Image (cartoon, rainbow, N blue to C red):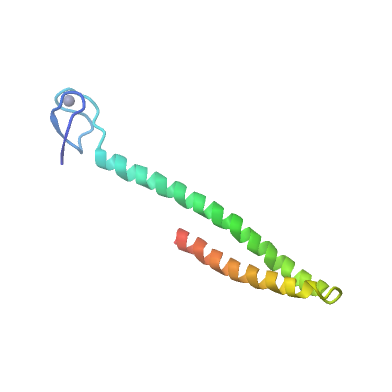
Length: 106
Ligand SMILES: [Zn+2]
């Protein structure tokens, strides 16, 4: 593919590193696009996994707290259903988020 040199307007191959007419360095348009997209995707994946890990932590805490509350439910009955809900939400949430993390990294 031929592109126009920024300096002199000469038609130069996009694979050339410099313009043969004036010697100005050629920045390949295609290479720029692909490297930018790669960087943006990397940032996107890093941000998503941070976000997912933060959220899955909440579910992990629920899953740890849930059985404890259920245990305390033997002493204070009102705590048992809360513990049960925590356990269920924590379990479902962690399953969904570990699937999402796998999906974004796979
Ligand atoms: Zn040139």
